[in-house]
Image (cartoon, rainbow, N blue to C red; front, top):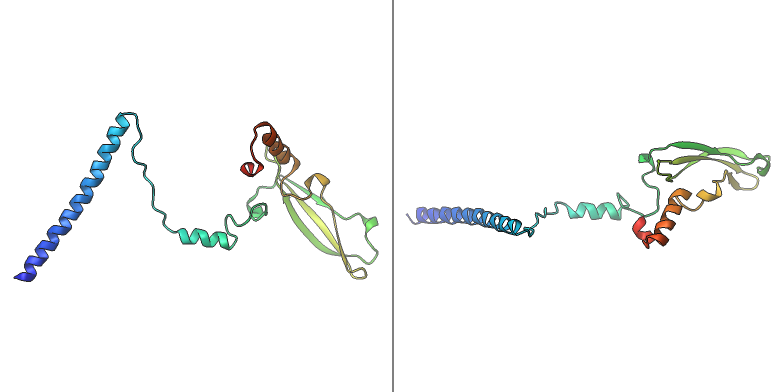
Length: 168
């Protein structure tokens, strides 16, 4: 008899808890509607983070946002032009051996996409113990962005007073 009374009591407590939750959400909706009619904003719906640990692990391992300025997503970039840059034959020693190529993807903008993939040829001289490779044009050296993007950044930096960090 006592066990039955306790079960009944627990069932009533559970039912009341569900009713309180339901009434609280309805009350909040009504408050939001009143605020909306007054021209104010209601309480925002903020979704709960599901897996914060996964995102932080990706960043630590160099995942999605692993490093600024590194061309980690070169496989996903659409290539519009491809140019081959070979070493000047007069700069090579006679015993230089061809050792393959290296790909460099430079992103640029002319308000039409214009990404260029440079295929840079490399040679190795066993006698000198040195590697020779074709050179990028000077305007592309030192960055994964081309002169069009850099001029755009500099223009916004000086004319719109934007920091360069905000532009990248």
